[in-house]
Image (cartoon, rainbow, N blue to C red; front, side, top):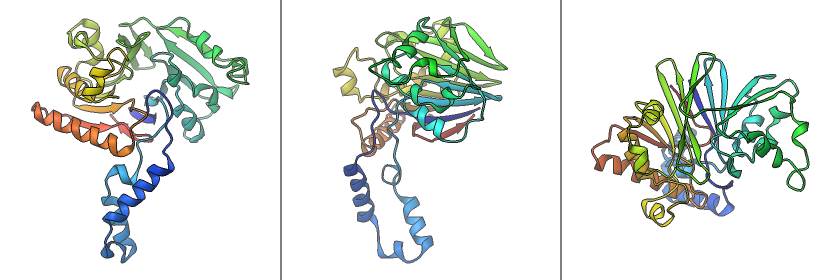
Amino acid sequence: MLIHFWGVRGSLPTPITPQQVQSKIMAAVQRITVDDLKDEESRAKFVSSLPSWIFGTTGGNTTCVEVKSLGNELLFDAGTGIRVLGKSGTLPKDNIYNLFFTHFHWDHIQGFPFFDAAYNPASEFNIYSPDPESRKYLEYQMTQPYYPVPFGALTKKMNFMTLMPGNTINIGNTKIICCPMSHPGTSYSYAVIENDKKFVFATDVELNSKDFDNSPMLELVFRNADCLVIDSQYTAEEAYRKQNWGHSAFCYAVDFAVHWNIKNLYLFHHEPTYDDKKLDSILQAARWYAQYIAHQDINIDLAREDMEIEL
C-alpha cells in the first residue's frame, strides 16, 4: 500500500509567501561557512544538513490523500491538492477513481472542479460518503456565480454510493471502513485494510473522551493501525480556546495513538497561519511529549506535500 500526500493544509490554501522564502534564505546564509562552499560536494552536504523547515516546505494545498492499494486508486477528499495530483502525470489514463469524502466543508471539495481526470469522458468515478446528498454538494459548487463550468461538463461516469458507518466495503481485495467523528456537521474517519496492513485517515476531528472509549466501531477502525494520519491543527492552548471549532491539538493526537496502539503517527490538517518553522516546532513538541509520557516508541512526523509512505 502506497500513501501519497497531495494536500495537507487545513481550512484554506496557504501558499508560501515571499517573506517566508526570504526568511528561509536568511536562515540558510547564517549557517553557512567558507568550507561549505569550496566544492559541489561540500555545497550538497551543507544543503542536506539544513533543517527541513529551511530546506523544504510542508505545503499549502488543502486536503487530498492518494492511496494505491492492490491496483486500486483510492482518493480521500478533493481539496486543492487534487488539482496537483491531476497535473502530476502519475495517474493512469482512463482510470477508475474511488473517491471518498470525509465531509463536505469547502476545503475538502474545492479542488474537484480543477481535477483534470474528472473532465476525461473515459474516466469513471465511484464517489463514496455516508452523506446521501454528496452529489448535490458537488454539483452546487459548480453553479453560477461560483464556477463557470457546470457539473454536467464532467465525465458522465459518476457513480455515487452512500456508506454505512461501521460496515466494511470491498474494492477488490481492499477493505474500507468509516466511522463518525466529532466535527461541526460530522466528519468521518476511514480505515483502509490491505492484507495485514491498516492505514487510518482521520482529518477534521475534535478528539474528546468518547474517542477513547473501546466501542466496537472505534476498535474496528483504529486499533493496532500501522499508520494514522490525524488532525493536529492546534497547540493545547489553542484547542482549549477554540473548543467546538472541530479540530485537535498535537498532544491529543499522541494520546490517541497511544490508546489505540498505533506506532506511526502523521500530524495533519495544519493550521493555515503557521509557517514551516512553527510547524517544525510543533513536530518537536509532539515528539518531546511522547517521550515525556514514556512512549518514545511512536514514530511521529508531519504530513508534508509530496511525501509518500509505504506500508
